Image (cartoon, rainbow over all chains, first blue to last red):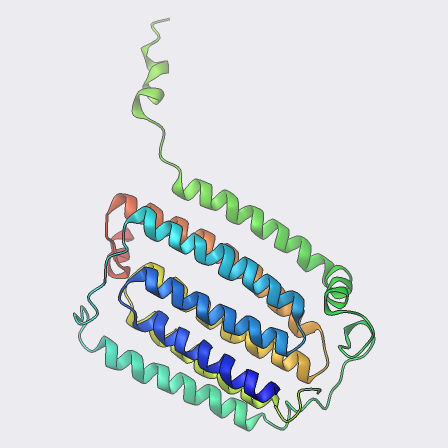
Length: 186
Length: 104
């Protein structure tokens, strides 16, 4: 059963990924991205990571892709990109070669490390997945115990991101506003 | 592992394929928005590997790592899209090639 789910989810994920890369219209690319993200969420469920699956759908497919669509519509760049023109000579073939080399290198690492990845080292205590607790309970214990400092730093990171986004997109104040104090003749 | 007959290797193979597709997309496409989507593909490939390895090692650490990756991906998208909006305001229809104009 789980093999069938995995195969179907893998096909959905890879088809969506190819769609993101190959579709000429950015809106279509965003929708293909949703397909891939939902497929990944299915794999999370298959691995008993139910909380992450929910977060994947809500945060990724819900928030991030909507943000993408928002910016696409805001900028009006939802017209098809001409994929046949090649501004830099030889970029496409070179990119495919580099991608194939990357895949080959990673596959080599996976095959070579196959013995290490067989689950010989099994975690215990709070981190063990086969205990009584639900996955959300386990994550909470580890996040706010072992990784409490990292969670705090994450909060700072989110604050910096919000402030940075506001500063980057803020329009500069109108010129007449800055000239106002100069007019005083005291 | 309670995934009967389905080893971590299959997940890693899928992860490798997804990562490579995302990398090729990042190199091929010139629309900065689509390039960001390809970065998301690569991050998701890593997430698949994290969760599968966590399940294989019976360790919740993989899921915790995915949690942090999600947060960093969200901040990356926020800052990246803000940059895209700022560049497009100055120069409509900018592609990744036009970002060289930022040089002083």
